[in-house]
Length: 107
Image 1 (tube, one colour):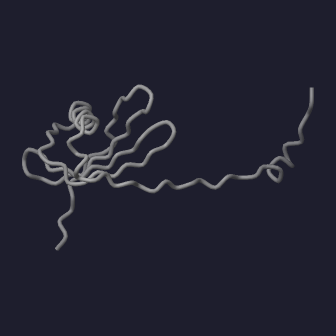
Image 2 (image 1 turned 90 degrees about the horizontal axis):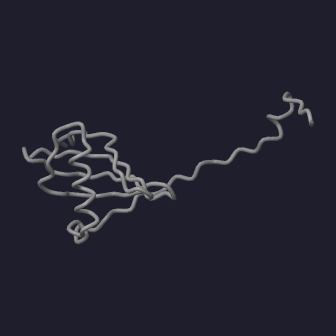
Image 3 (image 1 turned 90 degrees about the vertical axis):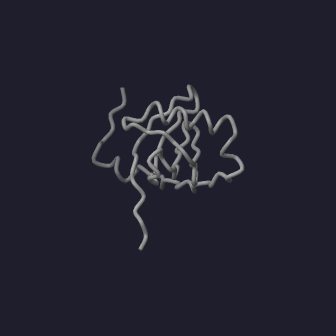
């Protein structure tokens, strides 16, 4: 059994700086692909709020090895613009809606 002096461990640990991933904008021509339609359907069913997507305005995605984070600007059935943030697991394809926020009007 080896004993380690814990008072010196802090000086021996090197910290890794996190890498920030840059979001990729999905072109509007891709909005009607089956993968995007399936994603939107999963968002509608897994959202805690009653959510029906009438129009997709913008999609940004950040990919990691385990999941994809989507930020969608959409128009709902009431004509309101919303920003929806969702995470999709890459292995089982489950979608979890993280937040739904109304887009602030710029004056």
